[in-house]
Amino acid sequence: MLSLVIAVSISASIIRAVSTLNESRFKPQYFTRKRILPFEDLLRYLLSMHKTSNQSALNKFLERRDITMSQQALSKARSKFDHSPFLKLFNGVRNAFYSAEYLPTLRKFHDKFLVAIDGSDTPLPNLPALLEKFGGTGAKASSPTARMSIAYDVLNDFIIDAAFSPLTVSERDHAKNHIENVGKIIDLKDTVFIMDRGYSSQELIELLSKKSYYLFRLRSKFSTEIDALPIGSHIITMYDDMKVRIVKFTLPSGEVETLMSNLFDLDESEFKELYFRRWRIEVKYDVVKNKRRMLSCRISG
Image (cartoon, rainbow, N blue to C red; front, side):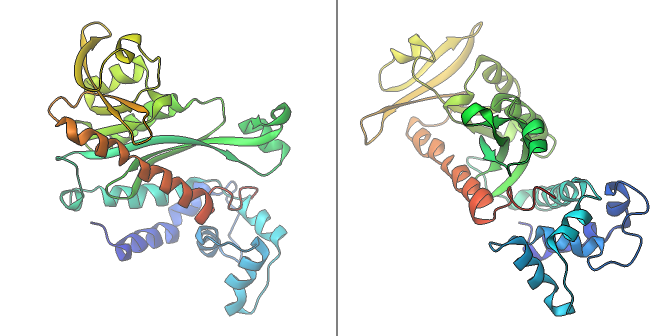
């Protein structure tokens, strides 16, 4: 598995590359003069997650140089380049993690990757430009909010693909894009996509049946035929003679859980554990949104 040292080395080389600056700055003259925070250092600061105010974190970042910089100056510097350096960093480390060198070392479930897909609405700073771009929620839809979505390798604790969009983009649309992008990184024939109740649809089920494996948690009334099935494993036909497997079991609360899959060879006893592995994506969202504060970090810049 890719070590932290190698990941840091890859990130450092991307940050230092002249092409990273040239491809991201809005004007050729930006970052050509000596500044308090040169482009490389500015990227490193923006990547350093912190739980204090921006000004306190900035002061701490610069204290060894015995210089200061205002939050306004930081925001002005940040406004001179786009998001592409962060995308390059993500892609660089991700591609190395799933490269031919490290692929054999990664964890699998019955020789298959487990990729959970889930979305989350994310509050943004209360700025008119963000409300216009992303949309809003709450009273009169006036609170700027974005939709984020990730495809997460639950066994190897790695986000393979991510999206951040206006609310007009649905979670299912994000899922379709994730499936396509994950297929560029790992073999879809060796992948099980795990999704919660909001994702189950004829379109996604037919899409995945042709190229990969899936495990959906079904909502009640998804199908009256499925609702009528007893506890246990069943193979039924849906959508123009396509076979699907339905597994139903009772939770400790007494609620009946219903799963749909095209894993016909997996023992019935393993489905409950397999689906609950999806919970790790909820933990990852907590890390991204709360512990690391990645989504709220200097978004206004």
